[in-house]
Amino acid sequence: MRQAKAGEGFAEDAGKPARGGRKRAPKAPPHTDQSIHAAIAGAILQGRLKAGAKLPEHRLAAIFGASRERVRKVLHRLAAERRLEIVPNKGARVPQPTIAEVRGVYEAHRVLEAGVIVQLVKILDEKILAILDAHLAQERLAAQRGDRAESVRLSGAFHIHLVDALGNPELSRFLRDLLSRSSVMVSVYEPASQSICAVDEHGAITQALRARDAARAIDLSHHHFLHVEQRLRMEPRSEPAADLKDIFKAARAPV
Ligand SMILES: [Zn+2]
Image 1 (cartoon, rainbow, N blue to C red):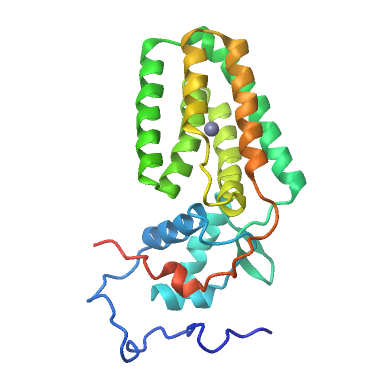
Image 2: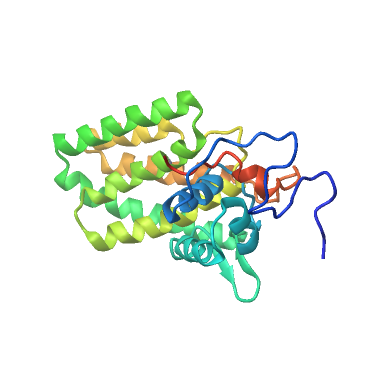
C-alpha cells in the first residue's frame, strides 16, 4: 500500500493539537452533515477532486473532526445524488466515467432537450422568458467572477429552467438525474482553464425560443451539448492528485 510521502503533510491528527508553527483558525464551530456535504460536493464541482479520487471515511472524519458514522451518512447521500460512487469493500470515490458513459449521458441530454424545446415553444410566455433572462444575467456574473463551482451549478440550472417550465415532474426528475452525472463529468474531466457551458450559447438558445423558432433552438441545443462533451478531456489530469487535507483546508463549518 502506498503511504503518503514524508513532506506531503498528510496526517490523521484528529483531536491532536495543532502542530507547532501552524496557525489554526480560532475555535471553528463543528462541522454539520450539511457543511461536510457542501465541502465535498464543492470540491468535486470545483474540480479539486479528480476522477477516481478515493475518499476514505477515516481520513474525512479526521479532517472534519466528525465521527465516521456522520461521514458515512454524508458519503451515502452524495452517492444517492450520483456525485460519488461507493464501491463495496473499497469505499467512496469520485466517479471515473468511461467514454461510453459520457457519450450516453450527453446523447440523453440532446434527445431530452430537443423534446423539451418542442413542448416549450407551445407554452412559452413572457414569464418564462423573464426567468431565462434573469438566469443568463446571473450566469454572466459568475463567469466574470471566475467562480467555477457556481458556473457549473448555473450551467445546469439553465437547462433545469427549460424543463421545469413544462411543469412535468417526471421530465424534471429525469433531467436532474442526468445533470448530476454530467456536472461531475464536467468537473472531473474539463480543463479548468475553459468555460463550462458557454453563456453565449445559452443566450442564443433563449433568443431562438423567444422567436418561437423550435428548429433553430433544437439545433443550437444539440451543438451546445456536443461542444460541452467535446471539451471533456478524458485522460487523467497530469498534475499530481492533491492531498485531501489540502483540498478541504478551506472548508469551514458554518457559524
Ligand atoms: Zn448548457
